[in-house]
Image (cartoon, rainbow, N blue to C red; front, side, top):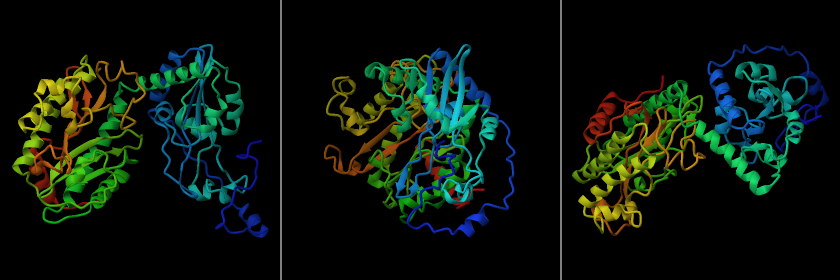
Length: 488
């Protein structure tokens, strides 16, 4: 019998109270059982279709995909749990410690979700365990979860025998999510098994490349909420005085928690020279009128699909001539990338299109030490001193979606209808960079949008936010005129 169902008392902390027997006896009686009203999620067929595609890729093999475990933030407090993206893509389950196993069968695979049993009132765990229902609320029974997800379930306590029964050399594991599962499925032939496990990760990522209509709707909802979040921030951004970056981060975070699950990644709110730091997440600066503000933020929806949008705005409402010149270079680069996107175009070639415009702009600013062609050459790329990153990435249930896809299907692969990707060129002039004029130092500009590859081009899913310098100024003025609002 596992500890989960043994009735043994949970671990206590030093601050936990002692419970006399009279109290324990009193707590064990007088409780009504209220069943949950559970119906299958409307997207259940989507998950089943994805599992079927994965099954077809690996006939006769056992496939193991964990959700992951809760992670300690400090002492006895955990980070808010988010399931592994590949696991959620195949199941729709939000709970920690769950494991999806596709058991080979004569007709393909039988999928079983091994998951926690409900901490019901059959034992004292419902009020003594921090995962008990008096602490976290009513949880699903195995049958309820099976109904909701359209997937057979089994108690987590039976996972051990299931893992032990996996055939060596015929089992693949999505590793790095659950250390207990990784240990249980030791490599049969270490080098060969690692390659086999990586192939499982490759295939799942590549299945995720083409989004279906439901996924596109999920992304659009997250992007629309992100647009509202940017509007919220613009409405509280003063033109004539400074405010903390964390105020703006918090305003967007309120929208993300209200309209979605959370932010899709740690928001980047970079005022002034902080905009030149690509992953600025400390957000402990203050805006300054006359300087720029770069905000890279995205709402993650309830089904974990996330937006990823960046806008750079003039704090006082109007770009200086030099700020506008740099902004317009970045905007021209982004537009060139969007114009190049269509089915059959190689991902890497879109990168080259965007970078060419940036290099030409840097040449016009007098910054390149060589000509544009030489700066773009593979044995040079000196233009990258002021941009560093690529033009974009795939987007979906991860902000950097499909990251385990093979190079030949991603970076060197052709775009297909249904791909969703970001287009996000940028120029960044570090405050300490003595190779640029002083007036450029501390200027960082990125414009990022989320686009869907269509049959004949692409559609900008985040077109609800303006992109050109003039439109940004008009938009910022209109939001300020409208005034602050609470999500509703």
